[in-house]
Length: 127
Image (tube, rainbow, N blue to C red; front, side, top):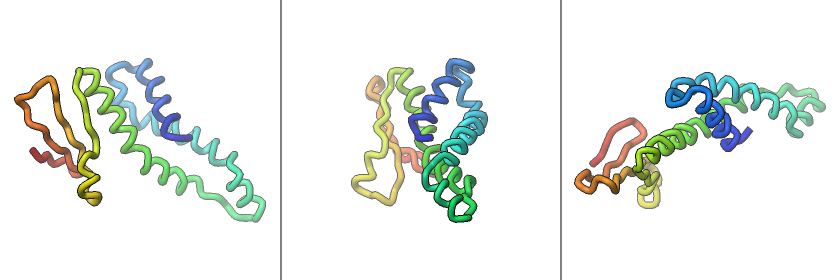
């Protein structure tokens, strides 16, 4: 399972739930976890561990996958929704200057009177 697969699952759920798909993220993650488990058990590294008498830990692998890709999934959902309104998101532009900050830069070209703003990880807005 990769991020691309997770996004494909989300697209399938969009067909099923329409505009309320974002409310079913936990359902999506449950389905993704089952697929991830299947892929995990079929991987060569897990087979080697089993042959050597060790027990592979799927939960540890799942937590790493979910932690890495949940933020990307949410950003893709937000980007999709914002772009459907005719707006544009320019993400992580400040990382070049301050790599320790995780900011998302928003600029709305269709509304020039609205100043650009940044959204920090903790939800705070900077404008």
